[in-house]
Image (tube, rainbow, N blue to C red; front, side, top):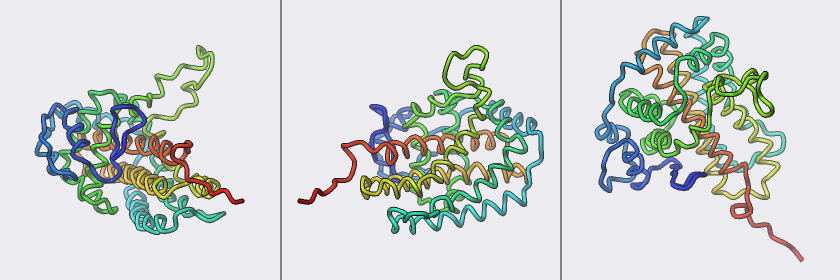
Amino acid sequence: MAYGTNPGERYSYGEVSSEDRREFLKALGVVAGAGAVGATLTDLRAEVSSGATGELAEMGEAIRAGMTGSLDAALLNSELSALAERFEKLPELEAMGVPEAGSSAYAELTEPAWAINEHLADVSFFASAEQNLPAFEPEHIETTTRQLLNIETLPATLSEVGFTEPEQTALVVNIVNTREQLSWWMPTVDYPSAEVAEEGVVHEYVAPLHQRSAEGSLLWIDGLDNFLWQNEVLLTEQMIDRGLWDVKSMLGGYYLMGAAARDLAEGSIADEHLSTLISGSSAIMIIGQEFLIDDVIRITDDKRASIAVSG
């Protein structure tokens, strides 16, 4: 566990402490005792009610109807299988530490996800999601998380790519416990148009929210080969370990999104689960980006490795 970039926020690195668990349940209106460290998603489901799902179902139905192209189930299945294999490389990256010059070890992780991403963009999956899902406001975060806990297949899906029970719990708990970071990510429509903006980003050049969460994650991972090599002298083992958790989280979020799209293509996903998994997976990827920056990219003096001075 570690505190987030904002006072009072908590971020779990692959394991949920009793305090993190209490903060999560408190945010969802559940009064909890000390509990056990590393509670499973099943344990949390028993304590958190699902709430009403009618609105989520309407959103999912609208996303399905709002796409302008047809999803290719065969392509998604093939690339998801390839992405699942990439998770097996994470222990190798941990053992490697800092990549050598010219390495593409991190970039190789994202190749199947980029293929999925191109297809989802082509069929307007991201555009339809943004049009029909609300921003990451407190009510939507709470509703999504309650429903995410009550998707009985979620643990099995995450197990497919090597997430242990404590890690699965951390992914979901982090959505609520770092909700301030999620609120920073605005839908495209909330950015000013070029006609009225005096400076800054304008919405004509901003991709849909869920596309930004997905592509941003892949771009950050792709850039780590060179960044870690360039900054090796400043990096500590803890920074690399935490960065690997952030990478695994982002890839896990992408796998959940891709799996939801595949199930949509196959007609095997309920509308409320579709909207829940799109929002939930996007949240996981956003959080991974926010904390990768804090854990590895912004190397402040208080956490950089000590540099021995000779002479």
